[in-house]
Image 1 (cartoon, rainbow, N blue to C red):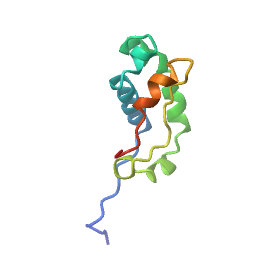
Image 2: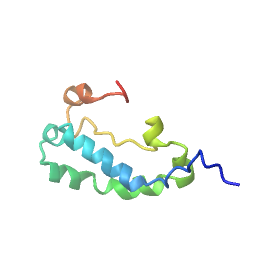
Image 3: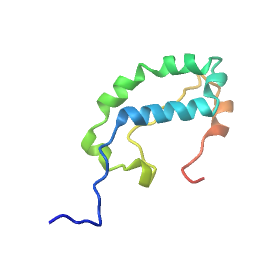
Image 4: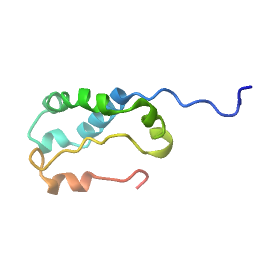
Length: 97
């Protein structure tokens, strides 16, 4: 018997999560902070996609439920070598904060 009140969560998609994080960084102005265009910035981080997806265990990822909990299996972090921390830290927020 299936519980009709609880739908299973959709299959996680680490690739989509990677894209979402890149879009967020671009929208926040990280490319300009790094002296790049949005396209150049996206090209710079693109090689990280394969690693992020490969290291994301689908079974473990499903426990995160990003839409419901705000938790994600990985976070793209722009280091100070790429953009000054004085410019990036004011852009950092917590979910709902």
